[in-house]
Image 1 (cartoon, rainbow, N blue to C red):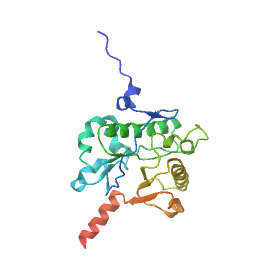
Image 2: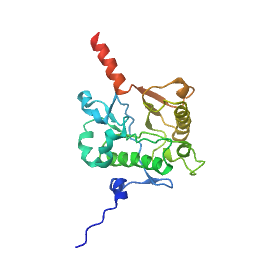
Image 3: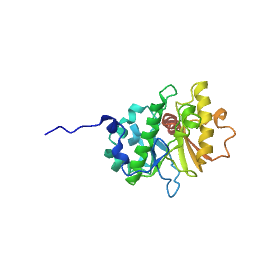
Image 4: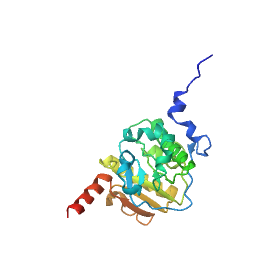
Amino acid sequence: MAKSKVNLVDEGFRVSLVETAFFDGKFEIPHIDAPDKIIIPSGMVPFSIRERSQNKKDFVCFYENDINFREILTDTEDYVDELKQYPGVITPDCSLYLDAPLCVQIADIYLNRAVGYYLQSQGVYVIPNIRWGDERTYTSDFLGEKVAFQGVDKHSIVSIGTYGQIKSAESKRYFREGLEAMLYELEPEVVLVYGSMPEKIFGGLENRAKFIQYSDWMTRKYMVDVLIAK
């Protein structure tokens, strides 16, 4: 009896998660439907420390080092029941490094949507995290489409993260340009922001959507500790 063949590329891209998905664009990015009702998270907790969420009231997010949420990409099915105990989930913030090959940047966008689609199909409330890399991902000049925004409905709710993403002058420029492109392309009603909202990046965009800022977990914990100490 011949041994069954395992396509490691298919397995790595978790194609089993999107067997029933609709796909957007020439790269066939899995589509996540806008929720029927916009729910604003009361807070966000990173996946790796989700047990610290008091009474599981926070949305689970992935604004942390990729290694800390590797299992949600490789073993998504194993976490569905647990994640249903929280109000919702922000899709994985897979790193789109500016110096990464374009194929890798596109692959990270795909994985973001693939996991989000699957969790949504299993009854988890999902808010898409939007992340872009260099200008090839958030303009149509190179690819003919803005791949960073594929797989997401317009006029709904999205989430972005600045935590750890705007350290250099170059990263600040790319973030501002990508943010403007996202607002133009998706026209979201609500934009959740995990991390700081510096004027240099967000200035002049206040009327483009309802922005809601969330402190990163370490800052939030520090603020709580200070209040307790008083």
